[in-house]
Image 1 (cartoon, rainbow, N blue to C red):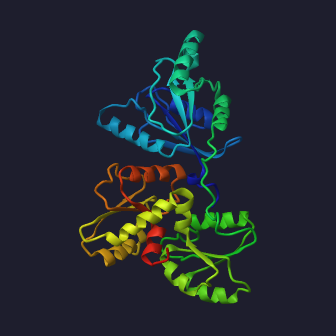
Image 2: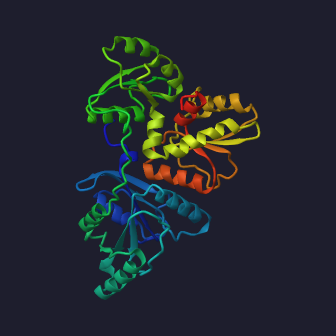
Length: 386
């Protein structure tokens, strides 16, 4: 891992109408030609992301979106894409075009908004004052006045972002409550087809880095070598963190005093709602051949022959509920707006998503009264480990 994963960066989403200068502002703030700039309305189609390291902000990612006023069938889909991007926003830049003077309402709740009045070079100072008052009334604070074309006010935008970073934007520690400084932790990590050659999968990388930061001692092994590894240690490890698929076999050989969890369950507690996930896992007991389950993967990898989400978890569920159990699988940012037809949603660990985006899906499930758990919690429940 050569850089901070996008999922661990501050997410800054640019919202506004077509031709308000969102793309120009993105290019000015990042100092790069990240997005195509044109006078043609609707130039930005799918949202464009740029990961940066900015002094005062640290690792962040800027997300440029299509205009909220886009129209037509394709325009409607572009707006849907923009609204989906908002779900991951830690901060929203509300970009208004001074030349048109239109201040749109934003589909944003519970996220800090930084109003930006762009193209101040195209209007008289009196117009800037009038629009600033309108934006103050709409967004609750004074706008940052800029000219993205000439780079005026860019530093002020960065400072405004810094001042509005929410305290809870970053996910809690993955290993919070599991280990203390100086503890010995054993990581059990299968190196199968889903672990690319020469690399560890992202959750393994993140846990190792965090344990090092917490001054813990780490021993890593594959499942086949776990027993020999434990025998070779001079002390009983405080915790074992394993792949979800081998939790049952690990539980059979660990000491009673050793805490056991999985990488997926750590992600569930850090990014999601672990209490809701545990409660929802009980729904597995009441699944039948006429039930319907949605399995959601955050990444869009090419499935392996023994893929956990597409093969192994469905096999476990059908062995309990019956072969007639209906299972749908979605990946990436594809996630149904209407979940009411499902008896249970099982989400992956979501290492590719940031915390706010995962919680948006959790909130959606709760609002629609649909139980939702995750891979690690579901597997642990099926194996009577929680």
